[in-house]
Amino acid sequence: MWNQLLCKHDILTLCVLVTVLADAASGSTIQFHASPTQIQYPVTSSLSMRCGLAADDPAVTSVTPTPGSGLVGKRSAGGTDPIQHVYSMTIYRDEVRVATVSPFTAPQVETKEDLANVKVTGDVTGTDAEKGYLELTWSFPTSTQTGHYKCLVDGVTSRGHSDRLSAVLDVEAAEITFQDLAKEMSAMKATIVELEDKVKDHQTQLQKAMTEALHIESGLLDCGNSGHWTHTSRNGELTGMHYNLYKPLSQSFKTQYTTPPVVFLSLRHVHVQHGKYSVYGFVLRNVTSSGFDMMCESAAGSSFQLNDLEVSWLSVGAA
Image (cartoon, rainbow, N blue to C red):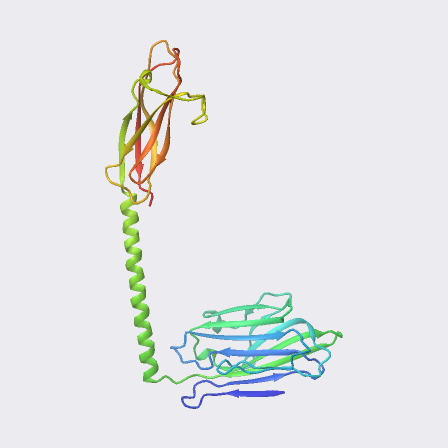
């Protein structure tokens, strides 16, 4: 057994007493710690607690506590039968089960008073670095979370023996000084200012998006008589359709968009010359913030003639 008492005596608020029991024949290492080592309700925003069973490593004989972390670990230098399989890890507070994890159940909280402000994670399937762990994180811990904590690890050793390791720590309530309150109020003020700036930024972005979404323009493009179109190509060369006669057109927006808008084209009017085949189409070629390009299409030859082709267009801002 190894006891380690971590206290701060100037404004004594939280003491963490850690006791680690390691079976002399086991050689396993259990580490149990809480952070921070001082909590002050309602100032302290979080309290984390973790119990872990390190994988056996003959080269390691101890773990040195980290100042201010409440972390401590120990193992027997002569251990020859470490725990190989963990079948239960449980954290108690004042002998009441707070959380547990096993190979058959997911990590879970078992006390109603902790459900509102705690998250639990854990796993006992085992890795190269750790056989298992159980971790609790409280948001804005209260006096309910103070007390005597114990972590129990039950498992089976490499020789098939049942084994149990345990560690304990105490969490006590903290006194709050005027300086603590002043510091907390200053931090809250800084947070409020930061949030206000973010809200203003979001409002500006939302206003721009709404303005852009409400930016709508429309118009009409006249392709004219196909007999006057001078651009030709091989069938399907430009759009994959059976068109070989086309006329390019461009349209500028009255007001430039922030980003290229969505442009819709639709047939407004078509007049096919009497006795001729009706082959026609139109396609959008390119869209920018200031305008777009399109193309009227038909077929070349004496059998095809369009007296007129008109296309309606509509542009809508892309928010």
